[in-house]
Image (cartoon, rainbow, N blue to C red; front, side):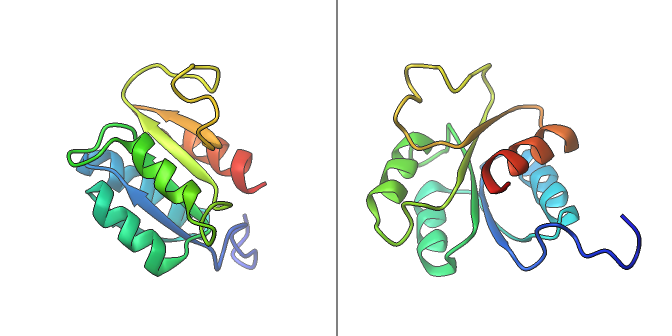
Length: 130
């Protein structure tokens, strides 16, 4: 990208709901490098509040949060008519795939397995945002 090119996702907003500070920091950096404005939250219920308040274009959420399951939080997002179409990327410490029975029908657009990298975050963004 030359200095005159605008980042592909400039002007878009993302919320990262992840209780691991290092993973959250890495995701934030990768998203910001692609032009997204990022808000970080380390709890699921607080993340849902931020999602409702901030109306992001993208949500990255940990699968295992301290206060609530990431899948439960995604089900709350999908049940809200104002948020149901927001792309969601799940962050997992396990080796999951979209074919995992636990994830089928959950409305998750992509899965990031820890440790995250610039390449895996970029791939997930392209998959859900185009």
